[in-house]
Amino acid sequence: MTHNKGNICFILGGTRSGKSGFALRKSSEFSGKKAYIATAQALDDEMKERIDKHKRERSGDWTTFEEPANISGLIKYVHNKYDVVIIDCLTLWLSNLMLADSNIENESDRFISSISDVHCSLFIVSNEVGLGIVPDNAVARKFRDTAGYVNQRVAETADEVYLVTAGIPVKIK
Image (cartoon, rainbow, N blue to C red; front, side, top):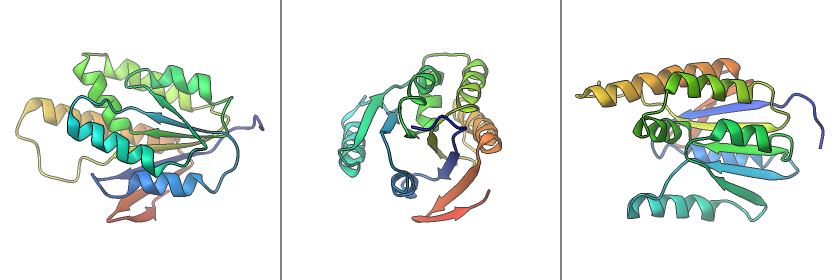
C-alpha cells in the first residue's frame, strides 16, 4: 500500500437515492484492502433489514466495522491499513451523536481532522436532508441544520463530490 495523501469522494443524496450503491460501484475502481464503516444501529426490525440488505450488496472482500459514534477514531486506525474505505453514513452518525447528547461541534471537528490526512481512497456517504419541507419541530430542524453544516465542511475537504438523485450520480465538485 502506498502512503501518499488519499483521495476523498463525498456522495450525497436523499433516502433511497442510490448513493450507497454508487459508493460501492465507484470504490470498486480501486484495488487493495477494503473497509466498510457502518454507522447504523439495528434498533428495530426495519433498520435490521436495511443493514442486512447493505451487507448483501457488498462482496466478500470488504471488512466491515460497525461503529455508531467514534468514526473519527476508527478512521485514524483504518486509513493506513486499508486502501479503500467507505463510511456509510454521516447522517446516521449525526443522529447517533444527537441521541447520545454528544457535543456535535467537537465531534464534527474531530471528524474533519481525521479525514484531512487519510492515506486511502475514502468514500463518505451522507443524506442531503435540506431539500424538503421545513420540519415542524425543533429537534428535526436542529438535525437538518447540523447535517447541512457538516455536509458543507466535508464537501469543502473532499476532492470530489457527487449528488445522487433517482440512481443517477452527478459530479458537482
